[in-house]
Length: 263
Figure 1 (cartoon, one colour):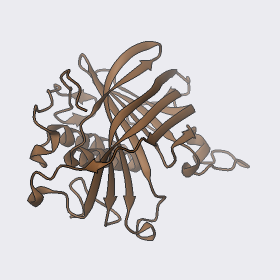
Figure 2: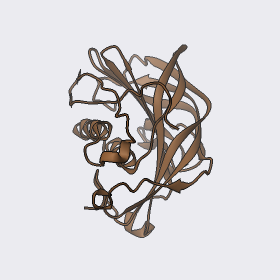
Figure 3: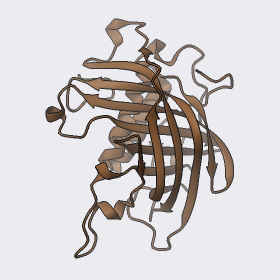
Figure 4: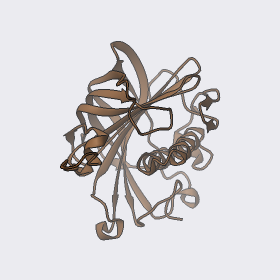
């Protein structure tokens, strides 16, 4: 359910480390105006930001997050301990699958936890993705086989996690160790259908809930848009105790959906 407190959304363009002001989410359901959803638009801008950094995987996850918001998911409050500091985030989970797995050429039931908060003029974003209910967080280098004789691990075997701070002196962090859980606690109901003409094409959806937990060590990258870890190995730990958050299950009839569906 939508929390009583005002949900802070994202708005404006993300250009390098610049972040414009954060606005309140609309008082009406987020899906009431499908394509004029400021929060969804902001996730699209994050997707563009990640694509500019050659991070196709996370760009895709932010596009799906935008689509989940347009499908009508209402974020929940998420309690996070960030390097020993208690913080409150807004969060939801989106789970995606395809009508034809051979068409999609990827594992089914991918799910991602997306959480964000505004701290002064800094936007903090946490993103955790996996293909199973729970999994160890893999060091990104373990999937690249960085040295001779090293066997690269499959991304399907574990979870990937990222943490971003966008604003003055922004930074990016990648999960290098730990565990994560994003498991459905079924409570299915239909997504809102306020305007059939504006519903995403080729996408069916169902609202539900997910149990989430996280205990992950993050390492800072060399620059805000880099995926290479800092040689100084600066780290931070984020912990999310067991909590239930809102979620949406998306099923695509196309292999490469856009921000607004299969069109």
